[in-house]
Length: 450
Image (cartoon, rainbow, N blue to C red; front, side, top):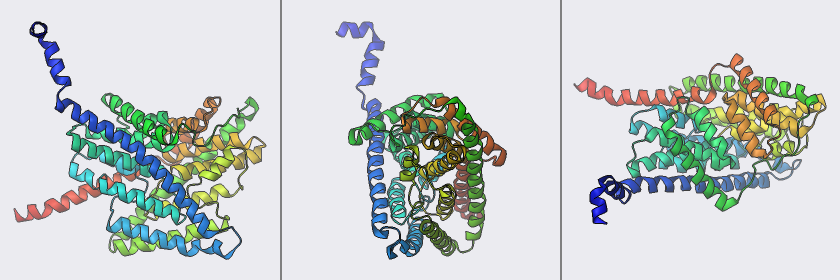
């Protein structure tokens, strides 16, 4: 054996490398981080569902006096969430996806720590759950992306890994994959939405993180499709529905994105002089309006909208005005400054648009809901590949792939005509600007003293 080692020095070096702690430590830490993302995502999902259920238990059946409780609970909950986010968890506000995108553009580890950290994992999960308990029209999927990216960035520190940007991308993809049980959508999301300048060398990190997070999720909740299994197939005669869902859904998606960006910028400018006081005022007003919309809709607009979207996919028509109410509730929840995502509410709005168009055109509600989700979601985030892949995986029906692709592309094309800024990337620039401003404020006293 010793003679073999002397004859083949490369073999000896290779053997030494594979038993080296320096080689295995970062790998083991990375694998543990990916599995942890899957486990945390499942726990987050369970707690979020319980929070929504508890809210509906508290407000009781529609028609009784308790159905008006949201007019007090929701604004108060919004104020508490906004205050905690401002005072204890700055950087946790909103979806979480813009923070992950911004962190990939920031070069300094300290700047990244303000928007991705273990502390923010706790804050993001807790405040999103509190928001759902108060009836906010938010989702947990965007926050799961920030949680996954934060955990992977911490993994980079613990494991001494230099690929921080690649690990943020991998953690974000793992978060989406585990949140929806959609591994392909996680990968596509990483390429299309998170990494517009995607590096080929991160392929292995993304795939490994998605696989391990997915296995952890499967081990706890098994293999499932988010919206159940849809068996309906679109006929050639129903193709006008594809065009209508793509164009109209994309138009409403762009409207949501445009309003969200404009109002968010105005609110931020208004916050300048009295940030905490004015943030709480905005949260209270938004919470009251969300509660009023929820009471007027019979409770349909509270929470993620998952139940409403699933019922539409299964063929039960939604009220024709549901999509408009849910869009407004989601917009108000987003600009209120509380932590929470827009993925699930956007799918619910899209399902509502599709359901209404299906009623008008006399077509199947289930198919119309799927196409509406594809068109609207592609319009909101301007990521058409992510839109149709995630809906395919959430319904387990690959017979409508061409129709979903067309609706997504029409939604994306329509949105680009109305709003030229992709929502998440435009919002990420806010966090990048904050990091630059913070850095200048820290260096200004040193420059003055010099």
